[in-house]
Image (cartoon, rainbow, N blue to C red):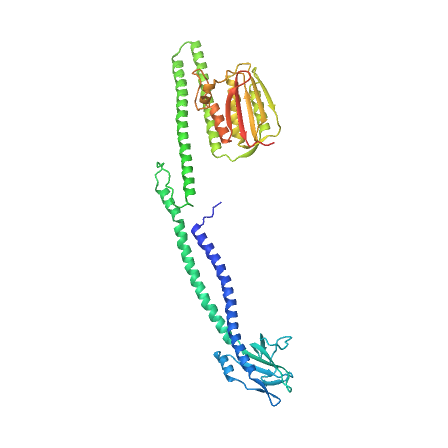
Length: 460
């Protein structure tokens, strides 16, 4: 399955651009509302001023309502030459006095001293109106006189459009400038990654120097992680080199011994001497086979410890299965095995294959180095702080306290007469360390060797 590759720079700029576009649309809606309200406010003030000028000229003369229409007031509305102006004056009896007839009024209007602005259709056009009232107090004319003054909305629309598009042009310029600054800022912010990439490409495979830590705080963890990963690779490489060197030395020595025995055997003429040397060759071959198996096991557990993904392991069935195999393989001997589990269904996080290989090596060591009537006890019990304890006791010679640290080192033999490969306990320690546990060598109650393994994360 092909993995999709994307540009971090492109993602940052695109998402920032989308965010700014959303902000731009929201601001545009706000500017449009502001432009409409600003245009209405401006022209409503003109309508209000003109209506006040007209209503102030209403008076009572000789028992008649007289209106001296101030054309100067209407001239204020000529600032919008493309608009039409309508007005109507209604007397105190609710009768048409002058102006246009049947002009619209607001719903449920009651005369009062406050102006009311509203929009209504008149002669097929949308018209903005203001209605004003004036109370007349005279014997012959007592009541409210009402004036309605209206103007079409062409000029309002022109003014609101001008405000809106001017503001829109300013916002667009700010948006483009901000996007440019974001693009430059993202390129500048990601430049250290390009520098790191170029440094890694130009480095020699033999260059073991760590990368220099930059002054940028956010990039420092990345550099530290790369240096840490590089150091782990170098340590693994060094370990592998040492292991290969030791393994090749051990295998060459064994092969050299077998080759020497074969050469001498070919020159021998006595049947008993040949038989004796073939027995030696067989013993050397068994040692080489065990060494090879131990080397492969060590390589296996080392690899699995580096790439281990912990899984839940049922420990009781694992130990029982392994013990069954060991007892079956040594059923012809006088070795006694005992198994005690102080809790059932113990589970730990880890790698089942590696853990089984480690326990197998411990039991095989106990069999190999113990007496013919060896007693091997296996104890499985939960410890403190969610720790699992696995204890293996034998009746063998044990390991002196001053040699126990040496015993877990690779290819380490505690005496020249030892027949093992020197890898058994090294395999065990590698596995236990991978499980974040501990390995302890001690003296068993019978005087032999006690191996105590403690692994965290146990649960019942």
